Length: 159
Image 1 (tube, rainbow, N blue to C red):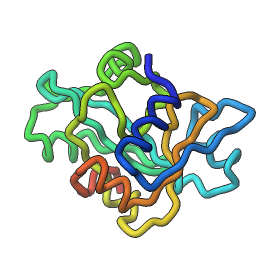
Image 2: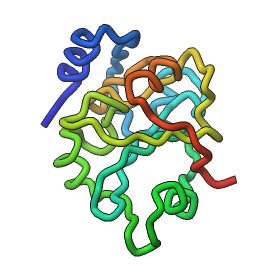
Image 3: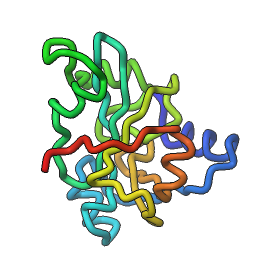
Image 4: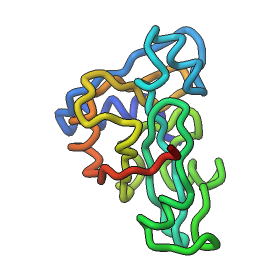
């Protein structure tokens, strides 16, 4: 299993503008993270793994928005029966990180990445994502997020 040290190593090796922020308490949810950091829930990004035709994709959305299955199916061009959220054990196997601590990059393998344009502004200077453990958060800008993930910005959340 990968940890915050793997993220720090990835940041250093790739000269990424971002840093890990630590908490005394675990922050497994968006609400926990926002409260601990003293920021709005919209500044917290969540990294979700979906399987489309069995192929893993990373979906990044902010705050407590809900990702639309229909929009994802349309973007990934798959039927309802061919798209599902990965189970926690699958997420760990695919990315190396547990659910609730998964960063938006630095996984075992680079995943095709989709970023919700409705909830993650492309000009945000301060976002926080998983930092590899439930007591670490990764602080970064949306430009860094886009640059490192090479993600595609598309409307993915529900209205």
